[in-house]
Image 1 (cartoon, rainbow, N blue to C red):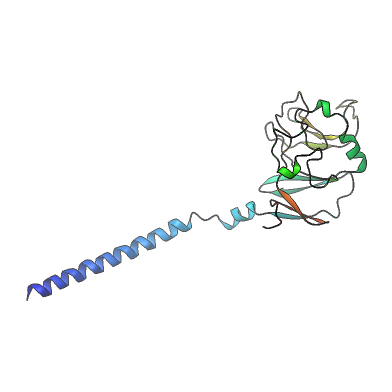
Image 2: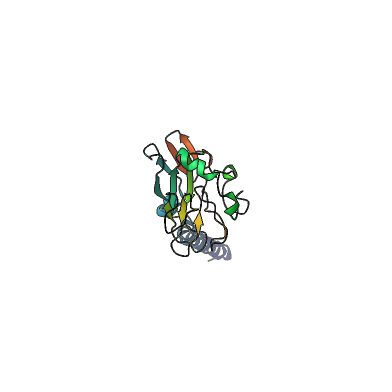
Length: 196
């Protein structure tokens, strides 16, 4: 047996071992790398939600879930919009300068359309669920109450635009999520451009 055949066999064994090791490394790495992709459930939780708003009566609201959070869509009546003009002196952040909302919602209505409010139904104090209290001057909220949201956990109060009153535990206004209108009767929550 010559030295050439020994070297050639050695080169073949080294090459075969290297190829087998590389294939094993790839086979081991693929499931690991794939595990970084979000699951179908996680993708669904982060996806935009399309909501039909045609059946929301004036002065009423609906709740929907987006990313595991309650979203309130309020169809404000003309009377509710008039009440928004009163009581701005009692608000902590009337211009929404310190609150979380898209640029388009930095107005007195905190919305794209004055009659439709879209806010997260989560108190900015400790995450409780504020209740809709749209009636005027109920006994438990006093004669100055013109409607809005009341958090029963610690007494935070928000007006009909989700703006927080001064002197309550909540530090900021209710959060406005990104959203857009697909048409007159459909809103997409989770997207400002209409694309999912």
